[in-house]
Length: 495
Image (cartoon, rainbow, N blue to C red):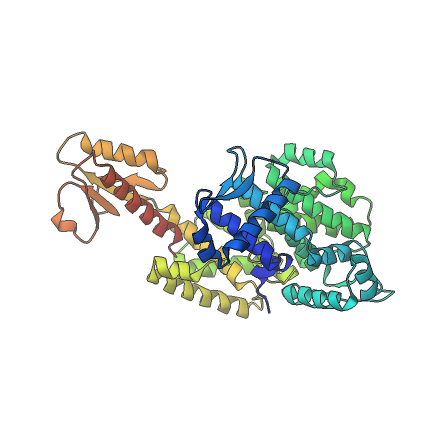
């Protein structure tokens, strides 16, 4: 079965993937690449490169309508011409959207989202393909989105051809729409006036507003089709704590008011928005919500509390009060997602932790990550919780522990004997480059994480030491900054 993170490849042909890869090769190499290097990196012939250049230029001309954006091959080099006012990532994302939107697979899912069909033959006729070809595509789609539990059913009396739980279906279509359109497409029927109202009330940036629009479009389409979300009481009780602090649905009354039993839908919207859009609540709001969650006698909040307490006892001692409540906010949010939707989160939506990254950075950290994973698996097993999102849950747990480690600043001791102003100059240069919350100076050499000096300190040879006897050597400064940066990286990702 295809991995969830590879889902979006379903909507791209092999040639389209190759063309996008060629564009990326050009962008990541300052827009100029030797044709021979492209042949080797992409494993294609020079003739194919020329054909791809012509096709990409046609695509750009047809969809971006900018004569200043084009690719040319000259003197053995391939050059991507792009005005300074244009973003290279915009070109890639827009062309990728066009390719995906025009794919047969996308059009199958879009047709079935909006309407229902009595048989495969009826849909095949609308899409101008044979029933046998459609059956093959349907099988591929079911295999690709198996983790969502997606199945297709047919018949005169079916309510929908999509046999999937309503909460999972809405999440699936948000996942599709956002990964394909990335905010480029504007869906019809979105209450523009209400979008502007929430922008003023919650101060959301344009990207978050687009994400909200996509969620609202999906919910509105499903409500119009007569499909409703029902939430168990224990989940409603938890989500209500979030919405009591900030009810996002209150800004979109027109979407919900025309339908009976809107309470579950509005609660669902509050959770759905928070699970896919970052930082809809401010830090102070997250802490306040966390305090309310801690005071709630509910199986899910009790489980989240228990998890954090045992995590703290096992790995990190006691959490500070405010930090604990913010952690409880996030753990509860994802716990509700795991319990209520119970699907594997696509890699595309969450940056999952890469164990090989931890292993390369520090073998000791990698061992800790393995212990952490064992702890989590034991906990969810004892609490009878879903384990499909073990990697995502591990990311959350890792972030919780990382935040504890990153709170401790990197301490530097500076000693420059050649000049009474030299030490102060070193400190000022470092302060100009690094945030004082992360890098601080100490006069106690025993507490220092790094010693910068023009004199060998014999009694502290076990400490990290950087020999700095010249203040006018650019190379010496660059190596010092690189050393500090690497140390900060280790602190940030230390488990």
